[in-house]
Image 1 (cartoon, rainbow, N blue to C red):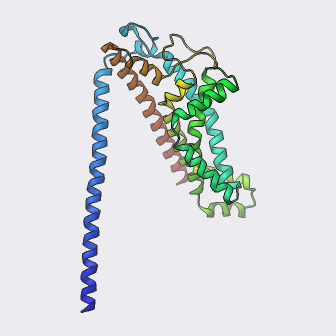
Image 2 (cartoon, helix red, strand yellow):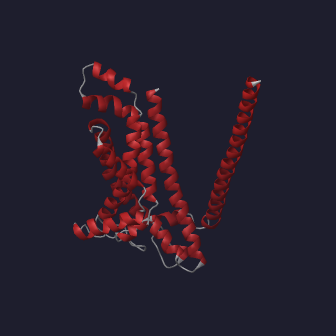
Image 3 (cartoon, helix red, strand yellow):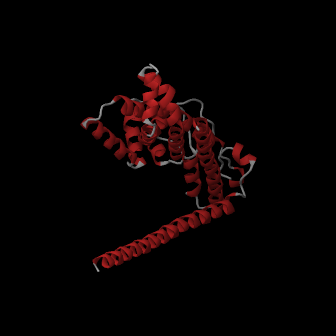
Length: 294
């Protein structure tokens, strides 16, 4: 009698868990579908309004007060300069910090506090980094309101994310690979550069390139460190005035004329192409190095 009761209770519990599982799966599916539908609607609206002005003249032209003559070249060049310099600063610092924390720091209270602070910094709003960049790089170090200050500010913005993703990639390297390299008599640094980093490289590249994609779409930190929303010339050096794609888009959306609203949609298309290109590059690099490991 007790065995039958136990079996019935087990069946009832299994059915209730399956029912709850099906309900949650349906809710998650509907949430995902809702997000995808909204994204498709937004992209469709942008394409509908923006394809009208998308041309070679738009990509190679300069901003103008006449919508039909306006271009986005200074914003493209400014974004390329800022993001390129940001990558040169953030990649070595982020990956180097992750290597030091994972491979050289002992597990103690200080490391726990450090990792907790890095995780917290990854969630700080971008405008806070803009204020920090204004106070430190523009006013204290007097780098001016140019590309260098913007790149340093964006580097601070994406460094926590690069460190965290690089740490996870390094942490996932099997312990047996490290032990095998040590058995061959190599030093710790040779083991890191010859075994650990090649194995962790797909995850590191994916995280770092996606971080750069985030920096490419940021506007609040650039506004704080002095990026202009209207620049009708190309930047002469790393300390000259500049603009970026998000700021140029913001400038067009702030104008009341319908033509400039459509120009903003065209600028969004260009920005989306840059972002999709960066994400595609991340996928290609990840798959390339993953195949080498396989």
